[in-house]
Length: 118
Length: 112
Image (cartoon, rainbow over all chains, first blue to last red; front, side, top):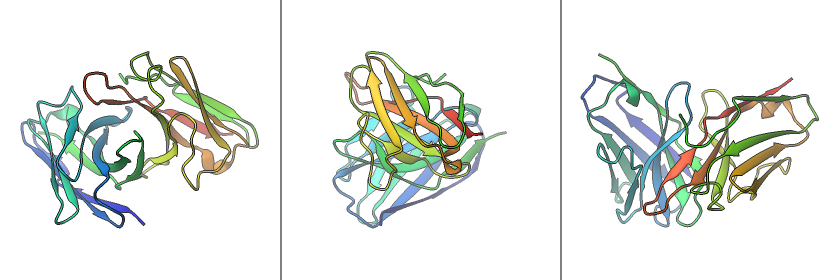
């Protein structure tokens, strides 16, 4: 059974850097894209970006300048950093898995509420 | 504003069928068969219900079905049950020069 467990700071001030980590239990770490998706309050979901076990990345064009996703295959973990956060970055952040070929997210982390407030 | 347009709400009585639409453009929904649907109950992570327009993951009841016509995808829930009350989100691959994924704004399904 695949499980994604995530953690990170939940309260940030404007201009700080958001940092979240997701660990994968069960299943293979290779052969998938490991993704970050966020859900701002009262809005729809937003894809942030993704990474493979070998470090190949894709980013949302609208966030690319502030986002970095990295991977640690020795720990089956991947991480998200978003720099220079503002109130618009307030959201529940989820990590998720998708198949290399199929663009659909079949396993999700529980979500972390990140609030940006001065 | 979300890239894909969904109605904010939908409703039906137990046993009835309801269809939720998801409208995009030829650059996303209309251009690829990578349309997926997610169910989200309050406080829970989204759950994949449909992928590649009409395929169901193992364990998803066959009461859930998906289709696409032009730039609009649809999710139909037949034989509505109380536990189907949730938010539903559509998603589509939207990459041309670069990989991109877009989501809809979500539809709140109420079982009357």
